Length: 257
Image 1 (cartoon, rainbow, N blue to C red):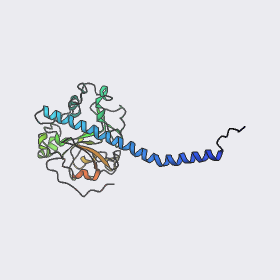
Image 2 (image 1 turned 45 degrees about the vertical axis):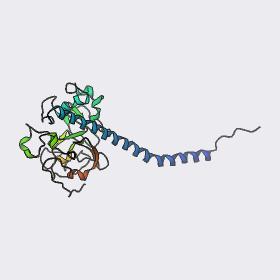
Image 3 (image 1 turned 90 degrees about the vertical axis):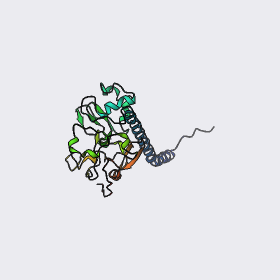
Image 4 (image 1 turned 180 degrees about the horizontal axis):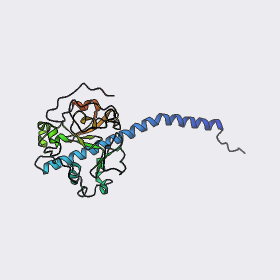
């Protein structure tokens, strides 16, 4: 009578070695697929946000919302109803896991609720005025700014949405709620968004605003949603070539750290 024959130790080791080799081959591919899926989800989020902003403008005589620091009146509060989150401005926390989840890039994590406002980073969302998210608005699209108007050339702002062509950035991956990029803004010394400009953080002054968008979130690039609701992956160096405001001239002399 034949005896049952099991695996020998050598055969078992060979099988383990084959599995190890297959895992070594497959893991990079799986990681790439995972990252690509997150990047695609990020672009989908931005497209929805851009469409919501365009719907807002259609309802408000071709104008985006005015700049405001009043509670419940910042741009993400006013845009939320166009994402079916009508009560967001009254209770943002209750909507984070609902439709307003589109405000987060999938590669970022939410901040702990320990501060009233705080910058984000490459893989960390920002928090401000009760809102949270991973994307920043091109603030040149918000006219009638009663807070910072004196610090910026008035002619750079787009008074109406129709003044901005489809190539004008609307929203993009960012470490803060929004920014006013200039062509001569410095490149951050740290693209993770954690250290800012040589230890100075991200000062609120001309010369540093592009840094809020210049963050290494998608392999030396960010996703940008444009006024025409198109969304593209934009390499960090090319951010200085996009027409952020009405007087913007491309700057191709950019070197990343």
